[in-house]
Length: 417
Image 1 (tube, rainbow, N blue to C red):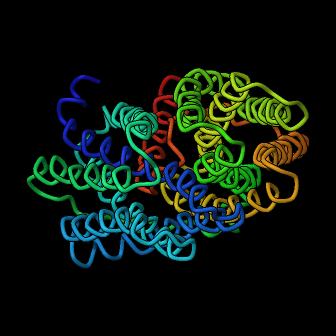
Image 2: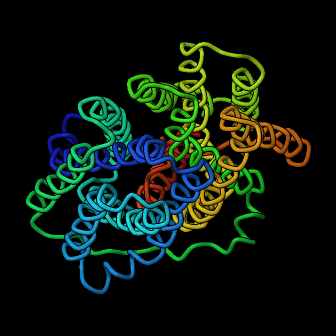
């Protein structure tokens, strides 16, 4: 892993700065929206808009890269991100914010694709799995550290909007200067949704439901915290707990899922998530309990994302794994768009506990569907792909890279047998 770090440190440093900027703006908007007295529904629209832009970016950014190249796309989108981060404070109107969130979601999607394709190109077949693990760790650390930065300024002013803008601008320097030649960009034609569903109904349904869970976590946690009256310090601690849980739980769950039927792990995690998220719905839980709930929620949802990708790959030929990733990403994105809006509606109807209830219901639906699917199909094939951790914030390039790692694991498994 040290060799991978030495060869890709500049890319990873740039990624870390990007995640600092993106992690700050996501939480900051929820806090500032409360100061501006935006309604919960208005903020839910603002938060959903990011995922609309991200979904379009995942489709259009590859076309832009093939047309004008990595460097120009990276510079153009990066400049737009810096401008948008400043415009939030300059135009505190929820409809303007929603439009800006579409733009910034589109831009971050494109920037991730450029960064991940360079990182993938800098890796070899032997260390690609290690590079992907480092990529996940840097992503999580960047988002967690971003929450700490929110405590150094006043959300009602400009400085907290200036900081992520500067961080994003600085992120381009190591990335652009460290790579002498941009890689050729190749995109994989996705499988049809019909073929993907036939391969794994649980994988498709699960990815859609997880899209709603993740977008609620990423987009509505700060809105919930503001509505619940949390201080900035408490809110940032809660959001950090979500990502810390996701980081800590990834590898133990991955290890377990490579040794038993993955559906059992999916079912157990979904049940755990549903039960734990009902605690703040049914009881007046103190803040330490809420932090624990957040950590468990993140510790369930993030590994489930990677777990479902691995499960789908178990039923695909290795040549189809990368192709399937684009379809799964699109399904997850569709679920993500609706997540904040439904969460916002539930919070307006029943109060701030609607934030937890929405995610709990999605986990419950996943548990029921996983249990039913276990009665419809035999156990996972004897020789299956490996579990490779992937963050839900990653673009299709990282997911396709995980598929390549899974395919290599499958080949090694067959060789051992």
